Image (cartoon, rainbow, N blue to C red):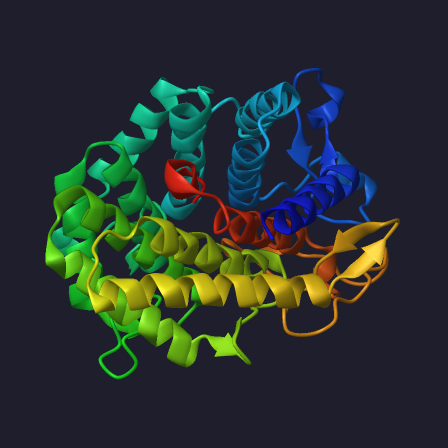
Length: 374
């Protein structure tokens, strides 16, 4: 079974590289993911590039290297990091704390697990998150600079990064803020955020994922039972409210294309890394594993095959649709990217399918390597 998922993950990797990866502006030693396939000339010139999609592309490239270590993958990772910084005007930061948190997580993993380290970047990101903490304004850290929207998509991944970056006290404060502010008392799911004192009640799969990741990191590092208990509660809530026929619910294309895969990544972390041997610990790990593997099998079953390599659907419980080079493309509106007319056209959707295959492979690995995959 391990080899089966390894083969599927490798096929997904090939598909993303064949269809989406290009040099940035033709510059040697660089690459980025083209945001659409089929693509336009503007796409290939990286007129739009979607910072946080590239961060997840990098994170999934790291997964692939852990699955099958190769020197050429290390070179790809270095090119992706260089391309990202150059396209971001020679800087690491932007105005969105959630964007920066995703990139911080990917760079932290590339350094810790692969030796492709950018310590100055990690310090820059840590300072951004630490200085953005504003409990006097109701946060949390905000979604973006000069904003009063404090949400799980910023605080969750920033908290995971700070826990891994030895800023444990602030990571705990962020987890406690989420638990005290954003948990739905009825479903126990995580609400999106709080804006100027009013709850934004949307419940997205990726919000559940990042909170699971943060609480697992804290359970491992602190031994405090409250973190494991929150994981137990949230895994059960995801199983009850975030599935369609046992498969992680899709959210279309654009930014939503990544939501389910982010949940799968951190469910994998629960399955491989949540400490403890109580019945509740075992149940959470078993459930998390089942949700990822069921979703991955369904996504694979419903894929299209184009030139012998997979094209994944935006919804893993139904057949993927072949994208065309006509129709509306994904566009950024007020800081969020909406879907292409056919969501399978979006890089986000295809990276998500690849990320899910890597997660399924990680669940078949053994020992310490298993825990590092997520």
